[in-house]
Length: 257
Image (tube, rainbow, N blue to C red; front, side, top):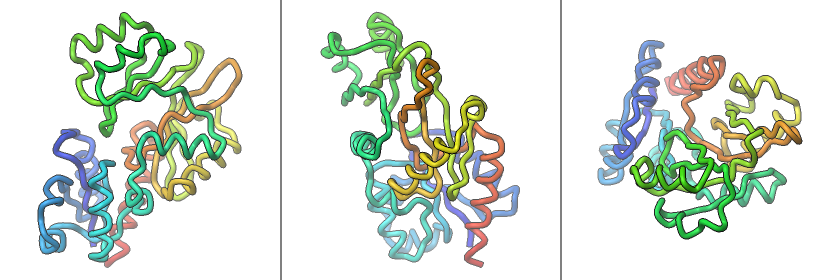
């Protein structure tokens, strides 16, 4: 019984530790492990140190290999179907387009400096976001602002940029737990049954049971665009979703008693 949260050494976030401490206070046998350490240990390590239920707070390609090993060792991995496929950013958005979802224009780049070569192709404002797990996005309104960000090293690792559409847009989050849909405060204002059904559809497309979706709402035409699908959210944008997520993890961890 119990739950293990797997995170990355490269992403020194306090969210997984906070989540683990909350679960421990709720009576859950919970611990943290680093994905880089698990990659180089044998099955005995996995058997001795990991709990029965695994939640990846990480979405690297390495997770795909580890999930196969964990399933072989009879662990229950939350979102295992998604993690085994190791979706790239490009694949995620291609599948969204193929299934009728609207997405922003994208300007992919392996490093921030190369975006300068695309000056004439970029339309502002745009969202600048890291490929890493959960760093905050930036909204860049001009090429000069972009160059200042690049020059001062505020973004010095692989990124991608997405068109922000217009200044009349609002970024918001939607959370999903076993087909129950939760919205952040802004999302509650524009919640519709169609939007709820679309989020359940995303869960089906990507084999996800627990996830969040970053969206953009256009105040002019009332349309919603999907920025990203996140298989390991912390549910920080919705108090109700956060409480239900703790309950969900607790039930998962106790199922193997």
